[in-house]
Length: 166
Image (cartoon, rainbow, N blue to C red; front, top):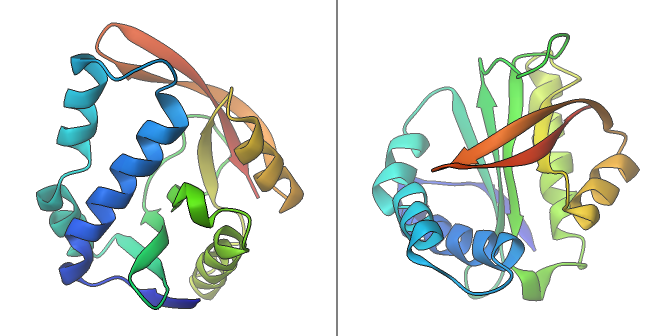
């Protein structure tokens, strides 16, 4: 495993990995157009290209001998949905399902937290779907605490998220 900063040439791999992880995590009973349209629009190569060129975004990837198997995204100057949090969000931490449990997520998180500390922020925040028990356990084990709740909305549906802060 090699952790490195993502570059613009990684945009399509990041998009594909995001679609894989998002659908595997949140779509449980079959994919309908409602969720497919969201995933294809949200996780596009064009959106990743734009984000990779944004100075308020930092992407770190886990690179194996074949390609990217995980990434973490830090978003700076991003207010939290609850008061009392620093304005740095860990907006994404995705590891391909077949590579989970190998320490990739922990290594990406530690590398991102190092960047946060270098920027003078020791307490970034993040959102986790309230039903994603494995992610909540992972972050709690890493020292994050639940500090509130927020809702993710897609079309006419809302999904509760826990807001966590280090």
